[in-house]
Image 1 (cartoon, rainbow, N blue to C red):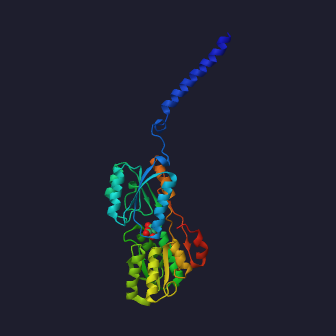
Image 2: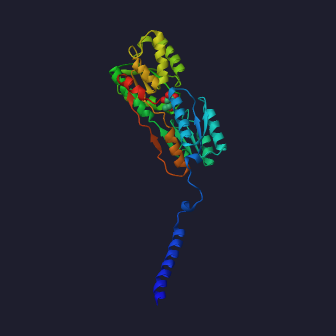
Image 3: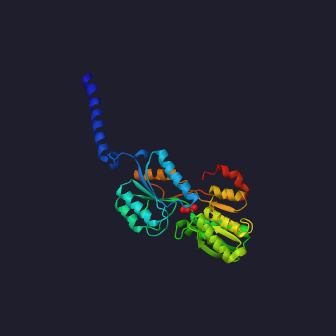
Amino acid sequence: MWRDLFCRPLLAALLGQIIFLSACAATQPREFISEKPTKGYEDLVVGFAQIGAESAWRTANTASIKGAAEQLGVELKFSDAQQKQENQIKAIRSFIAQQVDVIGISPVVETGWLDVFQEAKDAGIPIILVDRRADVPDDFYVAYIGSDFEEEGRRAGAIMVDLLHGQGDIVELVGTVNSAPANGRYSGFRAIIGAYPEMKVIASRSGDFTLAKGKEVMEELLQGYGPGIDAIYAHNDDMAIGAIRAIEAYGLKPGQDIKIVSVDAARPAFEAMIDGKLNATVECNPLLGPRFFEVALKVANGEPVPRWIKSEESVFFPAEAAAILPTRKY
Ligand code: GYE
């Protein structure tokens, strides 16, 4: 009797448990029982195809990527393409051959990536665009981490309108021809100043984002236009600083005789603003390393990531430059 009372519920419970467990196994999602373990940073192998070392911005960007890899324990294969697209293409091919988990690239120019991106796709290696975009279909990369260059151009345009009171002759120092930041900063600027018929871009020349070329181009423009130039719009700080040197050598006062607006907000721009030689700088954040590896890890683990991880940026003027300089990280 007592046996019956005791054993029946026990047997029923046992049976119930067996039925429940076998039902669980049958409905278990595949990933759950897959043998592929979740990767951690220390398991991650990442290739990064950097552009080069053309500017203060780029130096800070490289330091951010290398520093984050080291801190997180990621194995980073880093390539410096010395400004050449063909070197970046070679770097991607070598990353594919080494079977890295994820490839990061800052494409020097927007076009010409289809073939090599297709090769990465065929090899099943995801690409993350960092800093600059490439002109490829959406399914050729998993995410873009970087700035809104059009917006930076619009911000520079609005500052220029204020500085010139809606009237004046501007020369533009363009970044690397056909690069995403040069394209966006070019068109964003025009979207604003286009509403002011008395504001004209009288010359637009590439200084390839370097101080040396910015100086060289500015020397030529001063030969051509001299004091007729009211303002300079430089697509980065380095070219603005090159232009400042050319203007001083020419005998004019940068920041006064010729107003200057640039992009990046790197430390040398703050120093130039403190000296009264630069009128404003539009921020572009190069410190993308930690975010890049965070996204790379998610991608390697098959987790979803946003299509565009946008940098938050500001604009800076001479009045606040001295107070802000000590806090700048690049
Ligand atoms: O503004 C410039 C650098 O791609 C946003 O490249 C970057 C640009 C940056 O050389 O200084």
